[in-house]
Image (cartoon, rainbow, N blue to C red; front, side, top):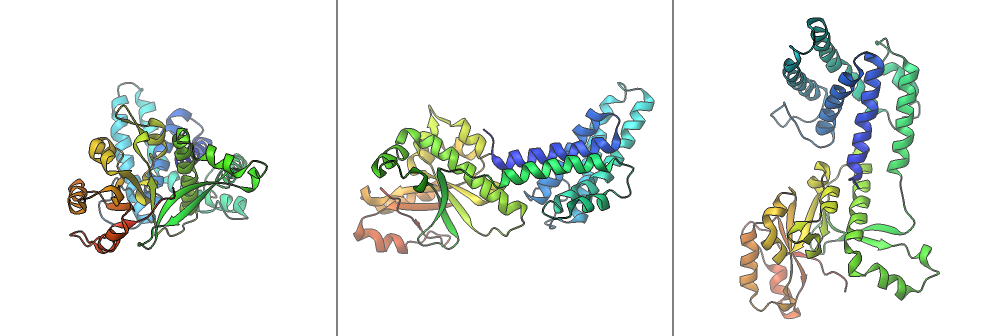
Length: 345
């Protein structure tokens, strides 16, 4: 099971690379492989904010992508030097020219990404490739299939679960992700039976997988529609994500996306972060320490211990009423307060 954003982007790379093959006709494997590199560079820049050549903080735009494509072209030409003694001289020169032409063609190819929601996209496709000697009907067919599949993909839904965003009590634009069952489709079953099955601890991993995929799909829709994302999301996990000291590979795989990393913080109990910090750092996610202060007598010592873990946030999931005002008003040295979110149950 792969992250849904990765699935979408991989299909974009595959479809756009096929269009490059339609134009170049010859050396199909060579073109498809290298066209994929240009499309991947575009995705890194446009969607993930990752630059490979441009070293400043320039916003994504045609000037930036041209420089990024120039840098990639140099890299591809340098890589291809190893084939100078493998391919004959004529083929070598031909492929070098193809790489230069592919750089220019890719600048027009990526324009397809901005017309995917246009009603008259077929005419837009013709305009994009008007200067090329290309079988435009094949291009329209490939792009049409791409749109049909991706539009179904981004509108996926299921009959049994919903994703809700629970506001963190004391922090604006900060939300805990929560998976809920859809009651209406399960009304023929008794409520207590639904709750008992849905909340069974043995299903934690499966619930996390579904939740992450639903969140990924929500973020994908925001991303490709150029919606401004100014929220921070939190995903609460626990010790069951580790088995014999290894972070669950399925969940690790589902979380492996640069865009999700920019907007999601992983919430884990203090002892789990303390014991497995190096392995959690390998995920490249911001971490939030979850502490239930209901059972802690020396609050100051515990907060000091949290400080030493150097995580982005600390969340209190429980407290004694007599300590609440102190905890609510506590400020770390950088001015941050404890996040307040009491989970049900």
